[in-house]
Length: 274
Ligand code: DGL
Image 1 (cartoon, rainbow, N blue to C red):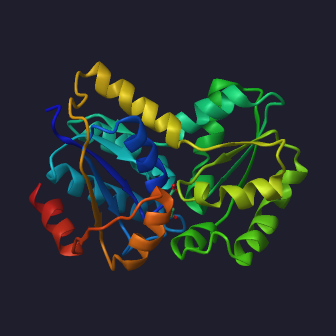
Image 2: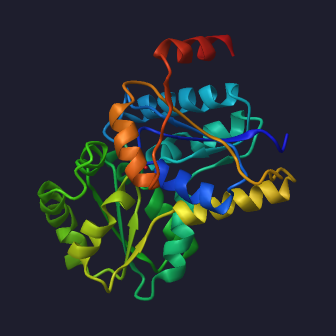
Image 3: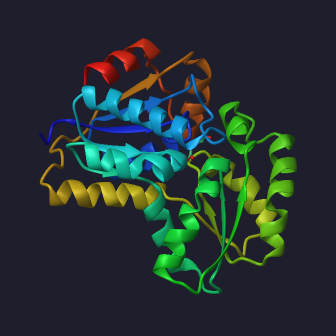
């Protein structure tokens, strides 16, 4: 069991920000990443569609023989985590709770901004979790729907990223928060832009590192940590791999040299035969 891989998925390249932290904390683990590039972005879709997509991605990874699943996508975690956790025979980790815990521990003024896709913000999940930890925390949230396509297109240093960040972050800046949660795994790619708009006094929280720690603790607890020195990394996408390779290599800081394209058909086969 300990030799099996960790499965990680997102709608696109964003989850690689989490993948990167997991691979640096757990270099001996085999990692399998799936980016659902045929259907990205998920953020503007209905709860039903997001749940189905997330379930299909999770099932695909399960058939690859994994010992733990990471839903490296906030909007999928928001809508599908409880269902997948209930149905899957392996530990399943989402990215929302780790980020929430970190935000609640770093805020001093108890004024916290949350940015994410439309679906994540609409779900209210960050606000609920933050308030559960500390009812005095005031949450100011804002959907930033164009951030994901900007990242997927590799435009994180382009003027368009700054223009949209100024526009999206205006209310949160005016609300005088001391902490901003990046509630989408694509957003750490825009961290420099977001920081320059918010100012250096605002703490920026994203869940990659915390999620990696949760994964390590869980594997330790279940006695499932790999004993290898160096694990293998495999990547799958559901449509053309070119821009995934380009943007993904920038995110990881190393070249992704092989990506396999999965057909939607495979998903359907898995879905109906399971
Ligand atoms: N990276 C994803 C998230 O964390 C989703 C982006 C999208 O597909 O809209 O929510």
